Image 1: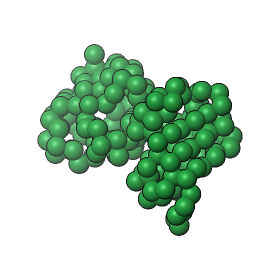
Image 2 (image 1 turned 180 degrees about the vertical axis):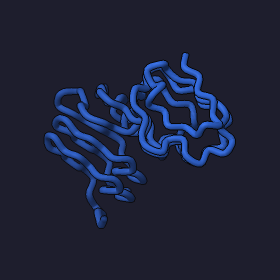
Image 3 (image 1 turned 120 degrees about the horizontal axis):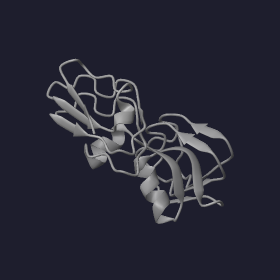
Image 4 (image 1 turned 60 degrees about the vertical axis):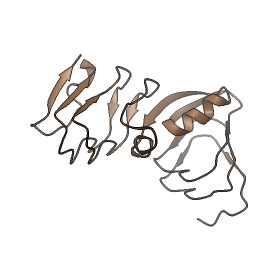
Length: 159
């Protein structure tokens, strides 16, 4: 997208921002969100966002973990935080307890032998553990037992 010079984005109510929508828009510094919004992974990746604001101080809808960090600095509460593959590349394989969802392909092709998911995770995206050749064990909340699609060689240990 050619977005040179755009410094602020105002998002209306009930919006879905698709993947790569504002990718590489390096001049965007602030996002103002009016109400419910859902961001796909990488919607604002490679942007220099410094501020996320909402008149209600709550973001309803799904937001990537990296964006929730910016929102929390502005005292904005996020209702649903998703840990994405981009988040894993930036912050590592330890999923923060603020997250309630794992996005699609988060651990795809990872080198981990063990993954421990926090009890806050209630939803796991498609192909989350595909091509994890070294993965031997996943520890997770019992609620997720039927939701984890892992190769049969992996031991799933609910806690």
